[in-house]
Image 1 (spheres, rainbow, N blue to C red):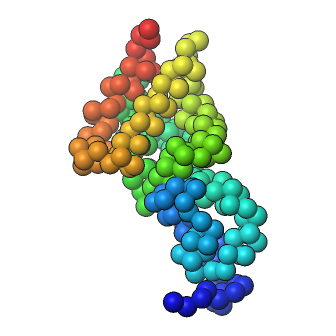
Image 2: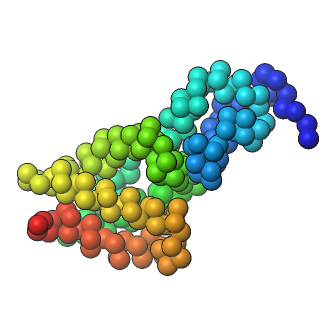
Image 3: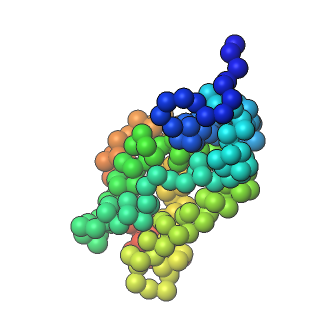
Length: 198
């Protein structure tokens, strides 16, 4: 087995992107603790010193690897922009799941959720991401003093859907299209947005 060349590789400089792609793949498959810097470097075909050069530490690499390549506020905003008030739940589920399914977002989102269940920093990062995106945006859809609670219930339901579809991979949930999930899960989201709360 050949040893990766030291330093920057010749040709186009995609080293940083290659390291991020390798880290996302291994964090998604193995979790943060088991994905070593050496394994990430080996997958990216670079010297481990380059990870330190670009990201400083493994936690620095984790934080950058788990940053979504899309703006969740924009995704949610576009999903519900033209939706009638009584169909906000379906529109939100359809737009978010379609984004989750996309090749650019899926590996990052899976890495984020898988790592968050086993690593405190990733859990904090996920919570902060949900607070400033999903919860903040959904709160804006509700015009009463229950907005925060409603938004957190929406975030909890969507997080459960993500875990079921992409990590636990429940067969029926995996097999459903974004439209089918919107019709099935959307009414629950709609209730959290507009229905009575206990």
